[in-house]
Amino acid sequence: MLNNRTPYKGHSWLVLSGLALFFCLWCLFSYSGAVNPILLPSPSRVANECLRLLCKGVLLRFTLASMGRVLIGWSTAVLLAVPIGIMIGVSRRAAALFQPAILFARYIPVVALLPLSMLYLGTDNTQKCFIIFLGSFFQLVLMVASSMQAVPRDYVRAGATMGMANKQIFRHILLPCAYPSILNDTRITIGWAWTYLVVAEMAGAHSGLGFMIFRAQNYLATDRIFLGLILIGFIGVLTDYLFKMLIDVLVPWKKNI
Amino acid sequence: MKPVLQVKDVCKTYPPELPGGSEIPVLRQMDFTISRNSLTTLLGPAACGKSTLLNILAGLDEADSGTILLNEMDIHSTPRSRRTLVFSSQTMLPWLDVRSNIELGLRVNQVSAENRRIRAEEAIYQTGLSGYEKHLTMDLPPGLRQLTALARALALEPEILLMDEPFTNLDAQARLVLQKRLLRIQKEKPRTILFTTHDMDEAILLGDTIHLLSPRPGTITTSIPVELPHPRSHHAMTHPTFIQIKKQLMDILLV
Image 1 (spheres, chains in turn brown, blue):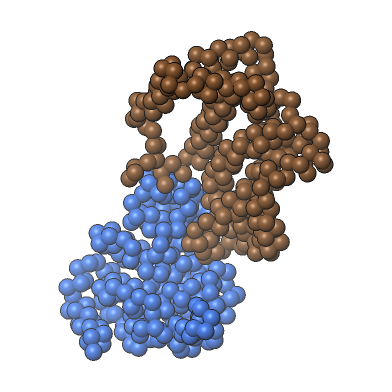
Image 2 (cartoon, helix red, strand yellow; image 1 turned 45 degrees about the vertical axis):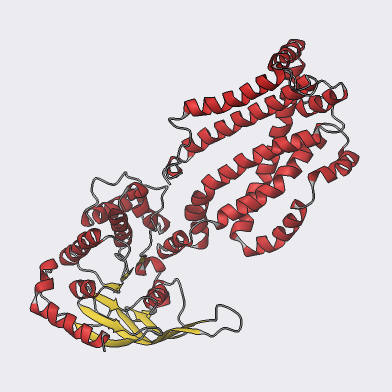
């Protein structure tokens, strides 16, 4: 707690044990027959299903389809939300113009927008990406704005006493100071993008991991549901890890704070 | 000789913090002058308006009334970088190393790369930071960080250097080292400095003149010239003049 710069360092056996414990519990409940195999498929059945779908080529196609949607929806959100968030964070006028509307929009559940989105855009990829965009955009704008506002006032005052004009304070103080936390905001948002992917694939989809999960429900194919959940979790952890490495490389000075 | 800085009848009142609250007068009829290449200390308790005055002089705040002349011109005609302020808090930018922190002020003021290098080099030498140029400031102890702040200000070659309790947040030992460094800088290349502190010893040791401030609203109650010989070191603290001034200050403060 006192020294959590690199939380897992030197604890790789704990990380493994934590995951192993989870796995062992799963094995225990499924192989012992304590839980109905229809409700809780065994790890070997999930692995089997994984192999079967891999051989058919469906699994790779679905995974890539979902990843593509997440990537397009999320990166459109980043491209638009970061500049708008920065504007809200530094300018009172921009805040007055955008913030109330965005606060309002943020509280509309994205699931409730599914029917409208399908009415407007149909059920193709555009609609899926749009749902992911809606889910990440509004949150990200507000996070970026608050990252900009979190720049210590003393740094701004220091800039002013060095003779910086507002533009220079923005360029030399505000942006470089907020940049690491903005990167982190986008990292957190990509997790939400995966949540909204499943929302988007709930209805009117013909491919994707979310689609696979919902379709499997009709056939009581819980092994396939488990496979989908595990895959999404795995991709999430991997993305997060890559992002953290990227942040460490891009902003080495942030590590020691 | 004409004074560098003339502060005449400066007043400042802050609006109430809460609606219906009362106004907070911080400065009342501040009046003093500073002559070239001397170090003036403003000695006063916490929250007596010292920082407000320095913020006004640095162009980070505005006075309600009064006149401030720098080199006999209205202070607003001098750019903020030429009356730069050293803060008591940590204001080094953590993503830049020592040298880039020092050069940033010069960069935004369109100093050529060649001159930037020369001026930063000189400031680094004067503050004794040689060898730390490539360190990120957050890897340095607070004393060296505050020296970087001083170097950043010196490199700007200000008409008047404002120092707002620069050593207050340092540990006692670092404070001694920085006081010694400032005395040495004043010996080698004297500058016009206005220095605030609530430490009596520091005010006497560093100052050529001490202005004693009242509690809020701050105004100068007593001014004492410090006739200690230059160059000074901490040994001056046992000098009869030092002790006599300290006694005089205590008599005023402990009434």
